[in-house]
Amino acid sequence: MCPIRVILLKTAPTGFGGEVTRTNNLQNRIEPRDFVAQDPEQTRLRQEMAIEGIDYQFVRSEEINPTPKSCELIEVTTALACASGDPALAVQVKAGIGRYFADLSKPPYKAIFNPSTSGARVFNSVSVQRLVDDWIERKKRTLLKKSGVSWGVLVHGNRILSAAVFNKFDNVKLSQSIGSFSKSVDASIIDKTCETIYGKMVTTIQTHYEGKFLAVLFKNQALSKHVFDLAIA
Image 1 (cartoon, one colour):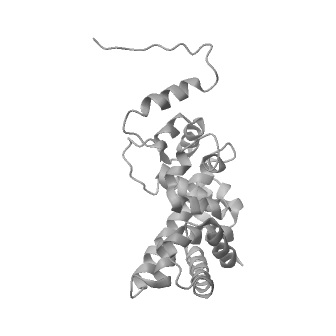
Image 2 (cartoon, rainbow, N blue to C red):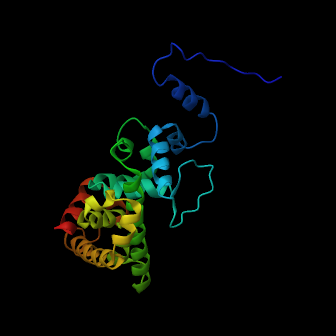
Image 3 (tube, helix red, strand yellow):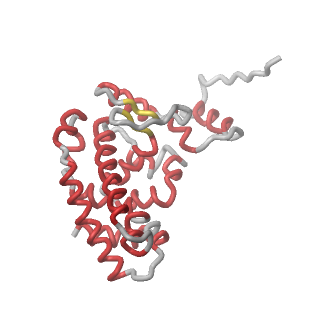
């Protein structure tokens, strides 16, 4: 015999079905991010990207294999947070990206996943984020030692660096069609912007926060915003 339970939702309050699913699954080994599958916005974004040939993977059980024609939830969340214009959202990624999925009804999740976010903006943001991450990895290989401010900014300040680069980027372009955006984005300009922002961040740390533990600094919203503001000045 297999026990089953039937719950009638006809007179249940709005959202009751989703809450039952969430509560029942707490007994299983799941993560908060698993509940995004219940959010219609995620399905909409997947459909919009699919129209332009992009596969968006947001279910954890799916095989994660980001390619030039695909993306997944964690990198999408990171890219949208950094592209948001709010350095606090980038800091939240660094402090613990899982907090984005703790409550899907309010910020920080709703700050980036809402009806105003288009599928094109999602993937275009991911494309820029990948260029920034690629620059960071190449920059790391040029450093003689894996310590000090120059290294720490790349490792611990990577999301603030990315947020500052997005600040210098033409935000309107992110809402272009994916095809049009891919033809217009210039990787060399992104590289130059990264170099400039990076230099300013290193100078700011050396001037204002010498000796500060950067792993802690870049999880502090006030201190990170100060670095961000000077980097985009």
